[in-house]
Length: 265
Length: 251
Image (tube, rainbow over all chains, first blue to last red; front, side):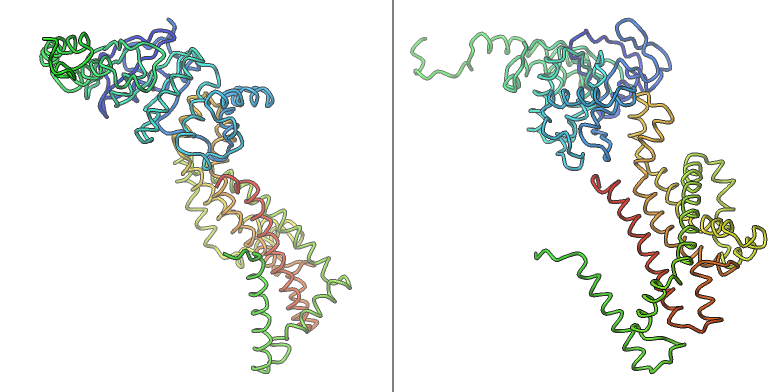
């Protein structure tokens, strides 16, 4: 499934793994979470190898996976309940987490009473319940429509900033990877290999309008080239794109844009 | 939409039933030993309950049903879980389960009375046996259909096997298990009556035999039948209420 995949996620940073469906992205996350054991190689968190079902990670699955017979509050408190934390303490913590993800008034709602986005927010709160060192997200918003997805990504950044956790997110959306991450790890199709590690030079905090900046477009183009093309094409494309982008950025406006009828020449 | 009481159709159906019964008696001109009219049965019903004829028999039957159901249902949930989780157990046990289910209780009952005497025990065993199969199957199906993704969640949170059972598998399978219990509880009533027919000195089954065979009191026989039906209805309602309390909110 995966072959020679090697990269690191900086503490308190956000890394995004981008790859086509079937490139082993979910497998990669399960390796990091200690749900699968690699045939070879190691996965380490803060220098210590990952153990079976490692509790230093918080996992958010593709679907919310809430327990339908529990309220939002009891779902968020579930990991704490399994760890044997007293009812009062876990409810207190779960309430704080629901506040963090903006579900304060839905504590007593059952999953079927929540919208898809609210369910996924509850799932994020649950993943944060044991204060993980790293939050793993497996295409968490793929079931949501494009607009809701943008909003949720902005909310995720907000949660990240307030908790200071490290995030590793897996996605097949280039835009999502660029918007969220400090670095995008591009995986190739089966077997999944690291095609490139693309740094994303966007400042923080990022708002939704970062999606329209030139730096965003360029990072997205580089990732797309690595996803689809051979290395030679990519080099050529980068060489061709760079001067154009530089000119555009220096000018701050398209060259043909001249409202005063060319008087300056 | 007008908001009518949910009891209204129930009452309407009861009225239709009683009127139809009375019409049958009048039109067919049946004698009492074939089909007594409803008012005579109702009168005998009230009489039998107020003069203390019915209660000792009804209480005996209720105890048999209660014990038999609890024993049968507990065993069934355990075995159903085992069958769902172990292929070997399924291969070893399922032929016997099906065979036991296919054997008529009417045949088993006299044997059990022969082996275990005419006391409470054979009736409890018969009730437990008859309750066992539907609840076992319901539990097996329920546990098998637990979402594997929820089990992976449990594993990722390092849930212990006991926690997986109590906090994931059983709650997830509960709707199916309760559905099996709803079927089981009405069967338990049949089991108790059949057990009593095979040999007993107390119980509603005994009272039916007495009323028909020695007292020739046919209204009493029908009043006993009505009592049995009411017991079955009440038990069914109890399971339904438990179901609503436990899984009503999230389904």
